[in-house]
Length: 316
Image (tube, rainbow, N blue to C red; front, side, top):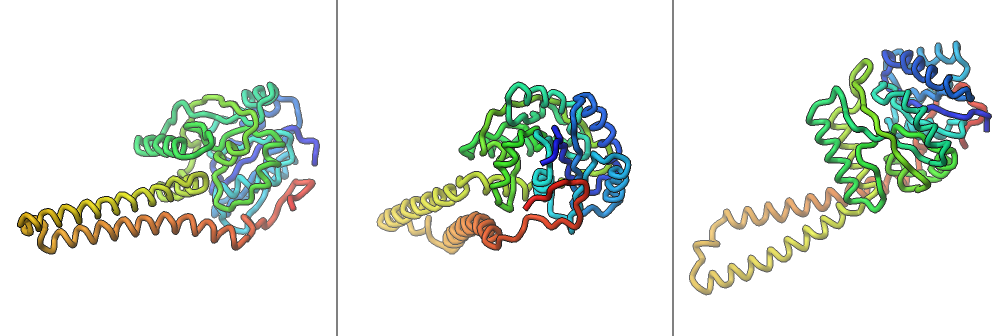
């Protein structure tokens, strides 16, 4: 292990317009600590000049290290790779779009020195985002909070500082469908939060459209809760009870000459469609969990590194 005090990990996907500004602001912040630090940039299969800028930044400042993936593996995997390669005593996760202000790192460091092992950033306001994205984000955090057994703080992202012991513990969690903020909460240790206002992207477009946000939400829920499976079981019991009640109602109606009320194909069709819908929903929920089991059984590596520059040691 090197003698770096701090590691700043930033996953990057098509961030050529933000990278130089990210480096400038992080440098200004970390110089104030008067301690050693490194900036770990992870190129997650970018199609623009992101990698070229990483190479240039490393050439002008040896504290900038970079990992170049063989292809795009996704944000959470890029964060994982950054943690695997980070060499510092404290590791900070931050996005490259500068929505999370690097200046907040100094407050996180102060909390770390006070003895906290995980310091997460809690969003008090989200600038430059549509009402739909803000509303769905709030809904997601509250759903995941209510259906999991662990305490995942509301309105937090991956922007956080973690002690080396926390990161080393997370390295023993090899699941491939990853939800970093949930995993951080699961490991425990002494944790606290700092509030901040999330700014607009410095430049470029979001890398998290609705489709990817939905997939991320499903990964988080299935990774940390069995409630969807339990809901499928409850729904099955509900349909069974409803069926028994319907049988009794039809029997009584026929006994008293009410065939016209329950007769015809419409009632049969609606009943069959309802039962079919319940079965398909249940199968879909089971399929999501089975798919994740299948990913784990294959035991493929989470990511493939084409090149890693600036690191004394590489993870096993």
